[in-house]
Figure 1 (cartoon, one colour):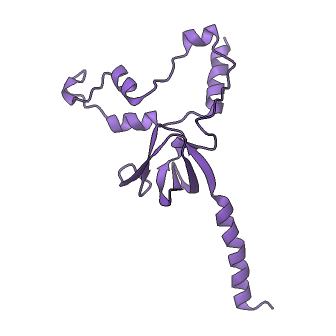
Figure 2 (figure 1 turned 60 degrees about the vertical axis):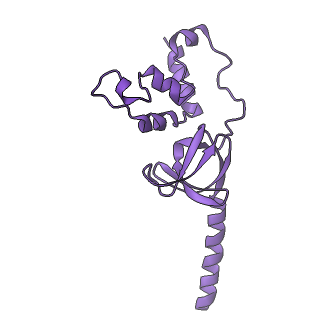
Figure 3 (figure 1 turned 180 degrees about the horizontal axis):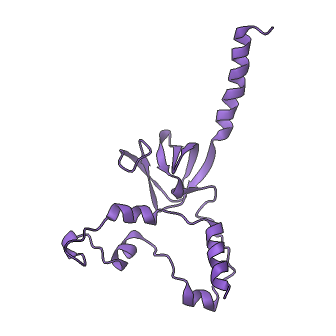
Length: 162
């Protein structure tokens, strides 16, 4: 029979490498990603990470990813990281077709463009209706969502089919 201490050592040897291999390097996809202290948009912001920076993924929890960035541990939305660098030039399409140019709306390049398009201004008194109150934080969350390559290809294929 194996002594109890030896059992503990064997278990530890199997567990430690699993944690090491579970972490992976990923890239920040959004212009600025906020690193939160807990998996909540209402928690303290520990840092802001710019596009293209490499982070180490520790674990995931629902829509959140626990990461290590410059020896800071925190949480970011899973929609702002990817295994592919945003700085690489990749395209699923060979080039825009005439149909694409006519039927596909390009995504706005920044928060201000989207806010301007929707009639939202920094001054809450200048909104379209006086009773409306712009929700800039939700708008920023929407802009931080990354659309993956499969979704783009599926959308393009649906547009190509009559």
